[in-house]
Image (cartoon, rainbow, N blue to C red; front, side, top):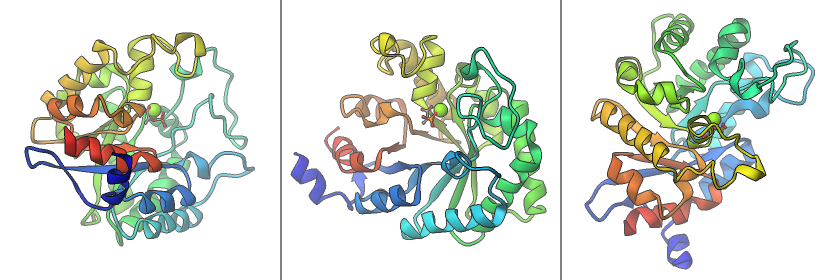
Amino acid sequence: RRDEAHKRATEPAVTRAGVTIKVGANVGSVAEARAAAEHGADLAGLVRTEFLFLDRDTAPDADEQEAVYRRIAEALGGRRITLRTLDAGSDKPLPYLPAPVEANPFLGVRGIRHSLVHRAMFAEQLRAIVRVARETPVSVMFPMVTTVGEVFEARRMLDETTGGNTPAGMRVGMMVEVPAAAIRAAAFVPYVDFFSVGTNDLTQYTLAAERGNADLLSLASGLDPAVAELIDGVCRAAGDRVLVAVCGELAADETVVPRLLASGVRELSVAPSLVPLVKQAVRQG
Ligand code: PEP
Ligand code: MG
């Protein structure tokens, strides 16, 4: 099965019912983008842009970011790249930004909350993203969204960046990884082109069990029915107006893939090396 999967890695993943499911890769560097292409990824479903911002003394400016996003797009041969805006927080502190100590960083100023506080830095990132989107297919998505107001504000800043001249192929979406956003998915539908469910954080917040806590591994499972119900609800709210993707670890679980597709998920994004196996899971249903 593994051999078969690797032989067919670059072919599209089509279900038995004839639906094509895009299988992308999650990448956190240019090298991973190359690995994604080598493993047949249809797109980069999640580019974790944090790697550009961590472990340095100053923030990268728009020129530097643009160059790296371009290299990622090139590594993927011009296939769509989904650039997630910075998901920083006091769990991943930036040396050049003074961050107050938080007792619970996972419940603190992270993701889009952080970007809407540090607006100059956010605007700089949006500038880089828009420049690349004028030349290659780019999706932009916001992490840790909780309220419609956050999406509204982020989109307003994006509009300001494009000067009303939106790049033709640019799509705008949000991560669904906070239970409040999953529960109220319908309220977000008018404001986005796609939802990308981040099952790592959605699981941790739904079950109140910290991701990465070795003592809670069995509790903090994306297989929990509470998580499944939330994903189902997101798909129902999205209907055929908004595409639903899943980019958390759960998407790489071959036994879960059929259930996600039955819920209405139409795109999956996983670690580069797992793309062939996930495509095969889609084919075999
Ligand atoms: C997630 O939360 O599921 C996700 C894909 O984002 P990250 O793992 O980068 O938090
Ligand atoms: Mg997350």
